Amino acid sequence: MRLFLALLAGVLLAPAGARADPSALWKIVNGQCVPHEQAERDPAPCTSVNVSEGVDKGFALLKDRDGATQFLLIPTARVSGIEDPKILEQSAPNYWDAAWQARYFVEDRAQTPLARDGIALAINSPYGRTQDQLHIHIDCIDLEVRKALAANLDKIGGVWAPFPVPLAGHSYRAIRIDHETLDGVNPFRILAEGDPTTGGDISKHTLALVGETFADGSNGFVLLDDKADLAAGDRASGEQLEDHACAIAGK
Image 1: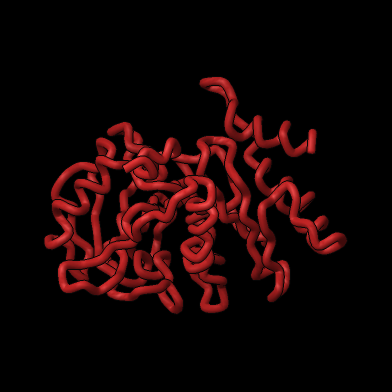
Image 2: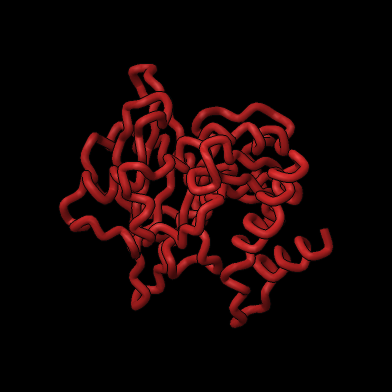
């Protein structure tokens, strides 16, 4: 446990200008959570580990020390991030589906049920993260982002288009996903294969996913995309659309 705390502190509490150990999450998952689950059926220090289809297709859920409700979904295979070509292979696990299904961990921490549009998933670009192991942030949505989505939901269609207003100070694109679950729906592929402007290269992008109920009563999602522009000060961190204080739990 002391090793885990030291590693995670290095991830989240590094001083300004310092570079945290970029393999800290990998060391926690691969060095502790998976071996503990395999040997003792105890995923500690992770909350859960799923390797039912093998370590190469598994994932762990880890409570992040930043905020009361934030969890991270982390592959148990070595996958660097959104830039890793392995995430687009046909046999790749759908980490987004697993992350969405794990949202109840956030609700447990919030001690209240949350509406479908109260939770966001996000993966940062390589320029907006400290860790070189893929991880999807699962947490409450920022209240202002939720309001902006609600006010402009009717303007989001089935093809990528600029979102009408900035979110967390940055310009995003949005697309509507008309599926109640993410079973068979992979946001990585929606960006890489459904938008010819990327040419299949999503390595500089961030994605954020929010559950929604549309005007016709159907459940689906809004997928948001931003591309890093360092000259403009945009590191493409979709995590900024979440609220790690989970103020929405009090609404």
